[in-house]
Image (cartoon, rainbow, N blue to C red; front, side, top):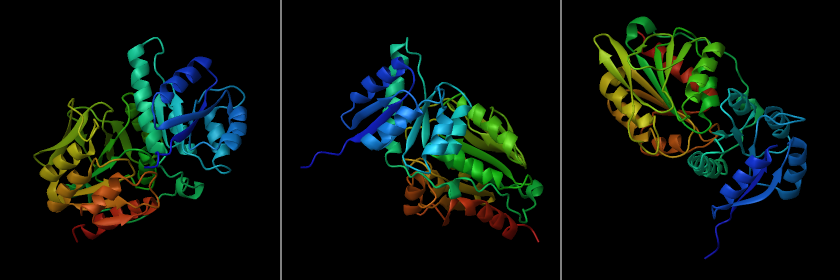
Amino acid sequence: MAATKKIRVLIVDDSLVFREVILRGLSSDPGIQVVATAVDPFDASDKILQYKPDVMTCDVEMPRMNGIEFIRRLLPQYVLPIVVVSSVSEAVFDAMKAGAVDFVTKPDVSSVRSVEGFIHELIRTIKIASQAKVLGTEIMHDDRMISGKVAEAKDSGRIIAIGASTGGTEAIYRVLKALPAEMPGIVIVQHIPPLFSRMFAERLDQSVSLAVKEAEHGDRLEPGRVLIAPGDRHIRVKKIGDYYKVECFEGDKVNGHCPSADVLFESVAKEAGNRAIGVILTGMGYDGAKGLLAMRRRGARTIGQDEKSAVVYGMPKVAYEIGAVEKQTGLSEIPHALLSILAKDSPG
């Protein structure tokens, strides 16, 4: 039986300490081979050509050229899945926008437990990245807002639920950026670490027409408002009279995740029934598929991202295969699909 091909990784970090931590940690996994390390983007460029890695890990703060600018310049010339390794900073979202596949937060190197958790997460992320699609700039950077009739959002009692994982921060931005402010309330699960979920919500709030915030227990879901699940809490919706509120709570991981899209979707199926629209976006694994199916069975309209536009066609694929997805479409068409559903279902 042929041996499984190892994932060839290039480590780029100006810190000797972190290069060694990552090198030692990744080398412990039999499925990964570190082919080289680099101290800055110029060193990395030479080693990409020399070693032809499958995945590159890249720091953000580096001398001579930062990681974001490096990613921006590199990808048009050399298509390579990139995992950003960074301290807690909003810069990771700039790296995602530039074309990186995912990010992992740097650990406290004085804590063995912190380093072990970091290595475990980095190995998992590299394995996902090795299967990810690096999307072209024409897909990533179409930020035009669409126009269209929105259903009577204030009176419709409708809600929209979205689930996403790897590649999702940029996909969610693209969907929300294209939507007008008069949308029904939207609640989102994005698999993302704590702290980053708040940064992500604040960043979206500054760049889209809708009002976006990290969800807090008891928040009302209102027209024109988007609530993002905290990075370490499940989220579900609850109907109270004629409005919906969200409940955020600690719990075991579901399908390997907290927050879980299935937890959200199943609550939406129960509480909103045919007044809901569910959307499942890019991501590895199967979180959200069963919950989206529950939504569809209760009369909700459901949309799934297609393979061509997904960074990782995992979650949408499983949802599609089990019959949870009513309409499968490209990322840029999802806002149109949402508006079309709202317009058709609008009274009168």
